[in-house]
Length: 282
Image (cartoon, rainbow, N blue to C red):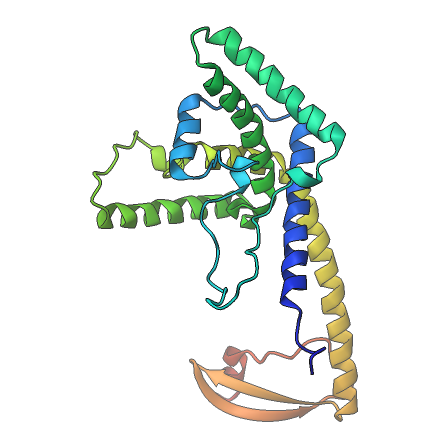
């Protein structure tokens, strides 16, 4: 009986390892990326810090949170709480060197553009730029836009987010923000850190790969449907090749008939009500 009970700790460890692998893949992509033209400002960094998205008390800040997920933890459980996913403990030496190389490049650029900036703020902002880039690659795998197949899905997602934003505005005591003309056609609500904007850009960039995956899935599904068709034919032959057909007229059940077939059929026959009614003089 004891062996049949799933090991919760083993499952949690496997889930944590899977999340860490996704973070490592995102880190590797971001460090080697030459396509993204991400330009964030110190104001955006401040917004993320104030909202708790960028937790400077942990490292890496974007993937740690002060909120502890203890909903499934018993009050009598004294085991150590599971940590949030992080990739830094499993990074290779070459990855760390490349990471700090990018941070150094950003730092030199920040100090060159702003002479009177505080040194600590400059260092923090240099790390933030690299971490923000890593986060975008991470969200490109797990973000809400991964559910969108085409531009129509993107527009539906945009309308849904604006609709929920309107509901939040009505129930909130804060005054509504003034929107630019036509903002709902091209922008995203509550996107002050430009996260959705950059996710949309990355979504567009992966259109060819996404189309390839859709074609592959449709091809596999066609093979599955063909196998199901053959299985139905064999089942009909074993059952004496009889079909029960329900005939409807104007949405109401008109008749139930049992048909005997003398040859295998690929699909269930459909009786057109118009032809039946004309043949019966109705």
